[in-house]
Image (tube, rainbow over all chains, first blue to last red; front, side, top):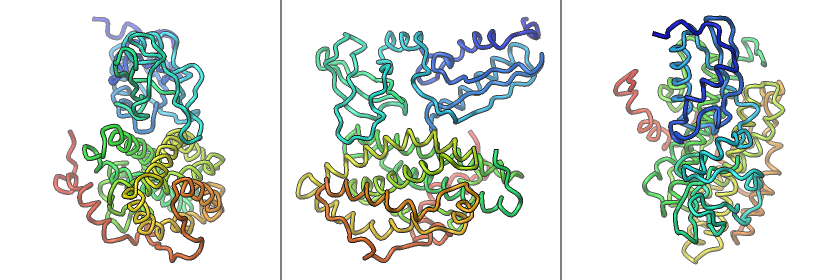
Amino acid sequence: MIMAILANISAAEIKTLLEQVSDPEVPVLSVIDLGIVRDVWVKDEKEVQVTITPTYSGCPAMDVISMQIRMLLLEKGFERVVINTVLSPAWTTDWMSDAGRQKLQAYGIAPPNPVPQVCHQELFAPHEAVACPQCGSWNTRLVSEFGSTACKSLYQCNDCKEPFDYFKCH
Amino acid sequence: MYEPDNDDAASLIHYLLYLGDNALVLSQRNSAWCGHGPVLEQDIAITNISLDLIGQARSFYQYAASLEGKEVTEDTLAYLRGERAYYNCLLLELPNGDWGHTILRQFFFSVFQQQLYKQLLPSKDSTIAAIAEKSLKEVAYHVRWSSEWVIRLGDGTEESQARMEKALVALWAYTGEFFQPAEYELAAAREGIGPVVAALQPGWWQQVQEVLAEATLQAPEQGKTWMQTGGKTGRHTEHMGYLLAEMQYLQRAYPGATW
């Protein structure tokens, strides 16, 4: 049993531990990759506080993520795990780690472009150029700005014909 | 964090319920399109918008519940209030009608919501400001998507244009309510928590007018229509009771049910 062994655990070590907690809807990404863990504060050997921020207001994964973080830290010996949710500053895909971007790509989801292009208001603006995660072609088209989850839009590759998700800039 | 005294607390809770109810009621209406949208991608779009709106409603309700204390939760606020205790604008509770009708309503509301949330960013209440900051990014998508569809349908076929004209006539009289303040909005403005809502009208009108013009739809003449009001103070259309009956059915039939 490893219970109650890890009383002296630092915030940095907890962040490393949290790499085990994945997004239930994009299981290849951890909460650290996503950039939704904003702060970890070890109050004392019994209590830890983790501050998270949602990707989108209605993201149904957030409740599951909170629960998984709590379970993990309780398992590691903390008696009190407080999960705080903050909305400001609002989450942005800029906070996604480089490792996260590479994992998405390998998983078949196009990672967010480094420079957000879609956050402007212009109507009927040309769609964001996104590379196909399967064949790498830039000859792709937007099928729908809204996709299988709030954070993705749907594209199709004109060359290899594969439809794919794009983790849209936000 | 803004800390209201007792007199202001009730007013702030009303204000939060108003903001949350607008989002929840339109979310409930839009969600009825799930599986019925004209094409799969747009079905997914409208239900994604529903999801964003329900998330915004949850944020406002969670905050309201924390101020109410006692046994109040975001769920009791959504599932256990009757229509007189809902403060959403009438426009949002109207039946969906056809796709054009739903799109036009979404457009009117999203443009309004964008104007309103921008003005909530400097709110003295930091929780409201944070919810607005978060939501604005989502609303930007809603505005663009609904604007483009108003234009496509208005400037589309004879059939789609006729339907948009019909929707415009049916919905226009419900747009004035956005800008006629309820008592809790006046209080919010006095406290520096929310904007003077009448002042949002010119910006809204300008944006609406531009899109309607692009859609080749005749914009209604300003000030010529008698505007319906009442929702903000709990006096609803006959549709609201049915909407809640459906939305609240499970919690009414099996009180406290969880799964």
